[in-house]
Image 1 (cartoon, rainbow, N blue to C red):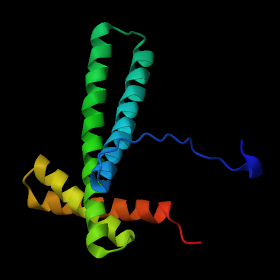
Image 2 (cartoon, helix red, strand yellow):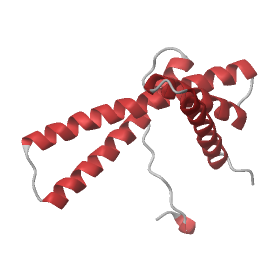
Image 3 (spheres, one colour):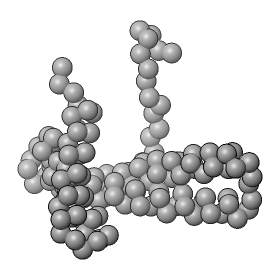
Image 4 (cartoon, rainbow, N blue to C red):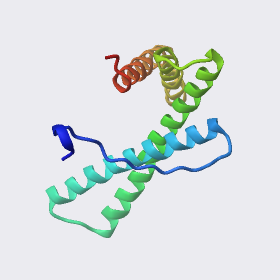
Length: 144
């Protein structure tokens, strides 16, 4: 435990240089959040195997496919969000919670529009995406 009784989160940096800040941030978001999505599935599947008390080649293959699918899904959402937010940062000329909110709203709307064609769900998901992104921005940059 670090001095002063505080906890620190583990640090894992992995970078892929795509020769452009927009692409670098987008790929970074895809990789990091995609890995989180895959790890979530791995934990769920491990729990299910332990709970059932059996493991088979078929179940392991199913778990790996599910990990890839979930990782790609969440990685894509994160990549879209990071790319949209980067574009908004550049257009507005500065970074603040409003950019995060707009990036989240656009991402929520895009993901929702791809998955369904009901306008009220697209609007609802845009509002949810904006709220989550703004909240995350406030939590990651508290004013003290």
